[in-house]
Amino acid sequence: MKITIIGTGYVGLVSGTCFAEWGNTVVCVDKNLEKIAQLKQGKLPIYEPGLEELVVSNHSAGRLSFTTDLIGAMKGAGMIFIAVGTPPRTGHGDADLSFVYLAAKEIAQSLEDDAIVVVKSTVPVGTGDVVEKIISSVRPTGSFSVASNPEFLREGSAITDFRHPDRVVIGVEDARAKEAMTTLYSPLAKYETPVVVTRRRASELIKYASNAFLATKVTFINELADLCEQVGTNVIELALGVGLDHRIGKSFLNAGPGYGGSCFPKDTLALLRTAQDHGVSLRIVEETVAANEARKRRMALKVIDAVGGDVDGKTISVLGLTFKPDTDDMRDAPSVPLIETLQRFGAKIRAYDPVGSKNAAQLLENVELFDDPYECARDADAVVVITEWDVICRLDLIRLKESMRFPVLVDLRNAFSVENAEAAGFQIWSVGRPAPRQAVPGARSLPVTFDAAPGYLGLATAAPLLCAAPEFG
Ligand code: NAD
Image 1 (cartoon, protein in one colour):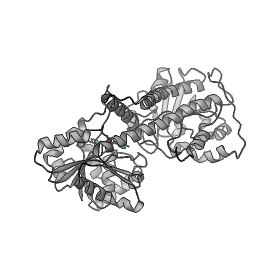
Image 2 (image 1 turned 135 degrees about the horizontal axis):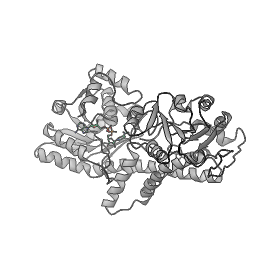
Image 3 (image 1 turned 90 degrees about the vertical axis):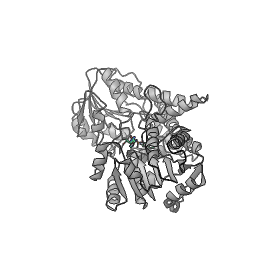
Image 4 (image 1 turned 60 degrees about the vertical axis):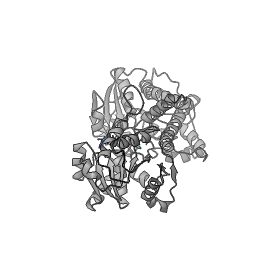
């Protein structure tokens, strides 16, 4: 099968490369000249573990190519995937579908008969209908189908997620599209991957409902973490005890500074907008969005508490800037509002991220960026862990502490064990775990002591959850 992918971003590039790996001939199209030029030279415009090798091998095998020439890329294509961005419309919250609609118009000009247009971008319910109308208006007598095939991959583990998904969702309105789509995904049959074939509108809504549910789960554990802090218990043990119930599940129960990234924030807002347009109130999702927004800034107050109640003139070193580990994506990263809030209170910010500094530099002002975490921590009044990159979780805490002015560690990902941090001489503040035994003078929160016996079930089994696999999509 010859496949054309419109939009060579995180989703388009990964999907195109994996389709090529399955033996299809794939042409990835993008309007961004620099991106395509880089890809033609075998260089990746994004950071995604394992992707470069696959791109290079499929490109060398002649199955994967890159172009800005849409008309040429459409020749002989039986399937055309739309994988362009659907960012939130500024000031509105609903998905900006202009890229999708423009792509549909452009595709319509050179669509061959019987081709299937597949919307892979995350789009509100009914978008497939509009795409079909756009194409029909250009090709009133043309024979084509429009299908929906939302993507569930997570940045940072995108290749594995694409090749071993929990399920594939396909939304179709005719048997021909159903046959073509199920054939395309037939390489997954050997893993017995469930393929949900449904109507187009249901497929579109499944994607939003999934992301809204996961965002709610994250927000739920975050709020429980706040309660854990007040009652002197540990959210990691709580999450373990709750998550082992298979009706609930362990994933997405890592408490932190609030969800971010290119999907959850925009998709929850877009779902709310769809619901409003249809006179439906999704109160749980509304509360999730509000609680998450408030949380990101409230994390700054935790840092201020940790340094004694006033951050003015103090140096805060931030470790990890991207919205999660193993990606360079800074879209809606919680680090940004947190840093901006600390800056408003007068803090001087130094920051380190193993991969995201280039993208972060475009979003953050007056932040000194470092290539080395220990250098970043030099003379700091506190170190704040925002993203649990492996390299950050493995830092030598004694060495880190040595260069700091005060040994205060605000661990917003529970990346370090309290015992290890305290043994290294740190006062550690984390999320949903007890506050330090010795509070910094002037701190507002009451320190809560927590003594668990060694070998205590929760602590013993909770350890592997530290620095757990990244989860946000
Ligand atoms: P992205 O911004 O990384 O990539 C989109 C690409 O499309 C850009 O390179 C842009 O230049 C290109 N583009 C836009 N209009 C074009 C056109 N008319 N012709 C050719 N190229 C065009 O976006 P992304 O993160 O890959 O997301 C794409 C879609 O997939 C979104 O709807 C997103 O919500 C969804 N999604 C993303 C993820 C994720 O983890 N990033 C996961 C699941 C679903």
